[in-house]
Image 1 (cartoon, each protein chain N blue to C red):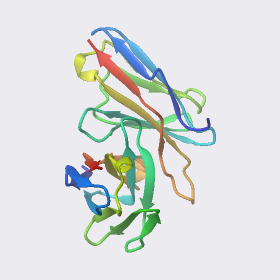
Image 2 (image 1 turned 90 degrees about the vertical axis):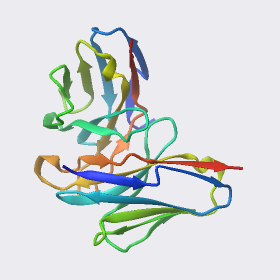
Image 3 (image 1 turned 45 degrees about the horizontal axis):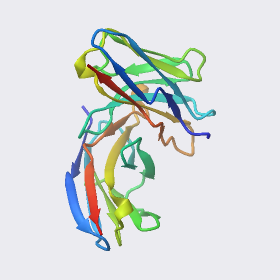
Length: 114
Length: 115
């Protein structure tokens, strides 16, 4: 069974700090890894990663995939209170009728204090 | 608004009643997914459709749950004889399977409370 584990489960920082969120996975047939941000509503898409070692960036957020280590990290620099949210990591399956199905981790709750 | 929409946003029902939720995907998307999320957990896959065909159902989806996508556009998720354990956020997502990737975009969810 596919499995995604995120760490830490929660993190409290102050504005301006840099944070690194971790995601590791065990998937029978890997297609892609996705990061979402969830703020008391539906998850909003951040990144999709398919190739190992290629960093994706969007403003202060960046992410990279390591297929050898079966893991990914999400970095947020110069955190702001608006970054407070649950960050979800999900892995998409590439196999047969399960193609595209997402398996989510438990999420990391990030709290940024002023 | 061209995103995924869900209706209703909140539903409170008594145990034993039937409920039905609706999801309208992004118009050109051919895949539609249903997930369930409980407090403190990530979303869990329930089922998905490619066009009107239901291709996979999770073991989580008991016989009391049924989903349809009759014309390959909107979808409905029905829960019969609701139980308190069904209380959760029900999320719908859609994607376009193709060479450019198949990122799933989520709707706002329907929060179900079973009393």
